[in-house]
Amino acid sequence: MKKKLSLSLALLFLLSACSPAAKPSPTPAPSETAKPSAYTAGTYTATLKGHNGDLTLSVTVDDERITSASVTEHTETRGIGDYAINAITEAIVEGQTLQVDTLSGATITSATVLAAAKDCLTQAGADVTTLSSNGPAATPKDAEYSCDVVVAGAGAAGLSAAYEAAKAGAKVIVVEKQSIPGGSTARSGGSIQAAATRLQASLGVEDTPEAFAQFLIQRGEGHVNEEKLTLLAEKSSSTIDWLESLGVTFAPELQALHRSIKPDRGHSAKDHVGIASGAGGELTDMLYQACQKEGITFLFDTPAVSLIQNDKTVTGISCRSKDGSAVTISAKATVLATGGFDKNPELVAEYAPVCAGAVCSVPNGNVGDGLVMARNAGAKIVAGGGAVVLFMDLTTFSGESGGLFVLADGSRFMDESSFWFVRTKTLMDLGQDRLFYITDASTDKTGNYDDLVKSGKIFAGNSPEELAQHLGMDPAVLAATVRRYNDLCTKGVDEDFGKDAEFLKNVDPQQIYAIPFKNNSSGTFGGPITDLEGRVLASDDTVIPGLYAAGEVANGDLLWQEYPGSGTSLSINFTFGRIAGQTAAKDALS
Image (cartoon, rainbow, N blue to C red):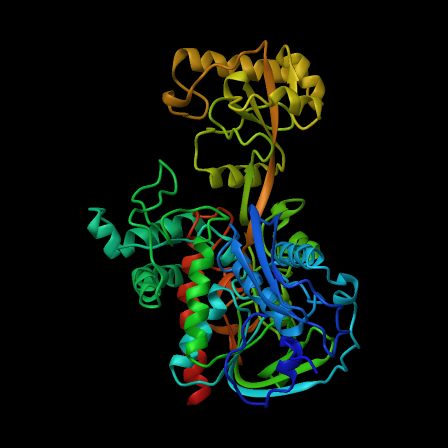
């Protein structure tokens, strides 16, 4: 019988106590696969387009079996794609099969590796139909575990909580609905906001935790927990030191939020930033490795379903494995770190309507499981309606280098050079959810505006009046708006919204374009409220025994409507994840 690499099945047969960590893994054929026809011995390669670019796979076979499979070149994201590459290639060789499940959270990379392997084996003369055929179905088997601390979610907050709990001597299990760790953080640019750090000092940047706390508190407009935000600011520098102690390397320069916001506080993993840079993945990957060294058990493809309660005390969590069987974990402390709810339309409508219809960059698993479980357990839920939402140019990517913003009625409403999250908050205050960027050909850096007009993605006119007709606006209103803006540009003073003269540039009314700005979400605000130590509070503000929460699932009293800027969420997730893990372990072991 061939050796199997099936994470889901392997986890079901573990003893009901903590065991060595399991690595992210797909599921090969659950039983013997039909033996393929003979191969033509040799090494074969295939290059296909992955998530970020070309991926090249090399497969070596002898006359009877696949002897190796490895990706020799790729640009996939660290902490996401590399997990899939390693797991899929190992599963192919160990299972001698192409019947390997893709990893949720890294589906595109998984599918690319499998397609490349099929190409290589076809070159080798294999019967790929047999190799890809379904084996006998596995028999689902329920499983039970027990530990001191169980953590739901393996993103920044969950990994931080698990690590700290294990370091405190607790036996820890982490359940994660995806096939890989990392959550939203692995997809992020990896920037963390922190004050009074060694990097700031080395660059001559003067900053204090008090100034950082005040910046965060001001964005909350009286609706945030000032004591918690002060604690966050005070611990932010030590959070950077802690991550460095785990092997994270930070860029030698600080990342600025915006030219209007000083001092710079963005500490980014690696020497570059960006959603696909791998900087966020480096943070979670290093932390995941640290958790493995502490002997923490990870159950992937195992979403949490409900909390287990004895009277009002939470005594564990009920989960479901990939094959549908039940996984029950009894624990003295349960930590919810399940992320946000961007992908749940019902919760979005209730708690963050600004996300409705947004292009969403978070994992599909972000559907608010933790919020719902906590709410069902009697937790107090707080949400101010905000989210990490940007109204952006997702069509031309010319940004807002020159021009003006108008609402659906054709009126201008703000200083276009303001910090981008001010844009979202302004729209929320006005009760608006649409915005058009009015510009001219001077911002067409790639020369594709006219093609985009033909495809109906942006709009054009030979006058503001003509443009307004395409947008369903009153022609007189848009014409007056553009005329007024141009008058202010000529004068060099924005008397209406205070835009800096540096950014005042006339728009050519005879070659005018309208680019729709669409909302893009990468996180939500709202969930169960905790005390300063991470214990979840009930609706009467008493502690729910045995229940803790941290990270995006529990940020409802830390963020209101305007997001303070990139790196704020990661600072919250790592810092309060650590605190919740320390508290959970202390309470469980006492």
